[in-house]
Length: 209
Image 1 (tube, rainbow, N blue to C red):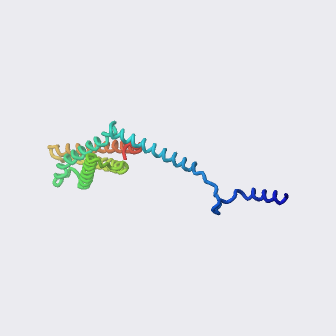
Image 2: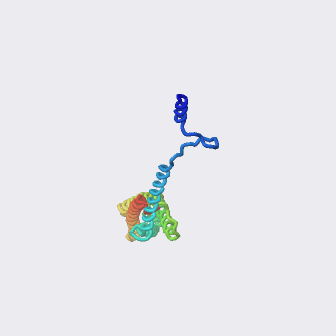
Image 3: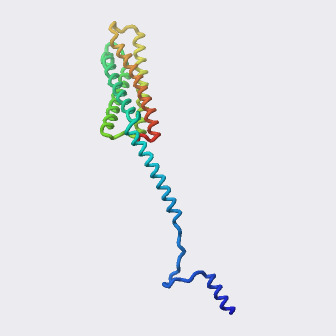
């Protein structure tokens, strides 16, 4: 009797018997928690993607955000064309009588021509629906603001120095062109500053890529 009780206690302590095939039955794992976590993560990720998609779709369908950056690029293109047209005559007639210094001419042509090309490429990309990344556009807008401001300062400084010499001829048309180019360059710098602010705000909100 004592041996039978001892054997029963020993069997119960050893655990459940092995299966018929000779392999021990392993305790089943419960992956329900991991699956549920993955499902919840995927659901949150999908909801976030859907929300961003809806915002982009809203941005592409209506609202001022759709038209503001291209409109600013059109204005910047017009400013570059006007500045090149205004500075051309004083720059090419400064050999005999100095209206503008050569370094200012070089800076002005480099700035106006470069950002004229940038505006054309940006607008062409809008036409074929191939947009610039908003961070690259922001960097170019910041560069345009700085260069236009520096160019305007140099042009107006040359205009002021030439005017104070009091030896320019009675026909003041070239001086007016020079002053106009500097003034329009200041307006162009303001356009690039506004474009920079708009692009950064829309990019941070996720409304543009």
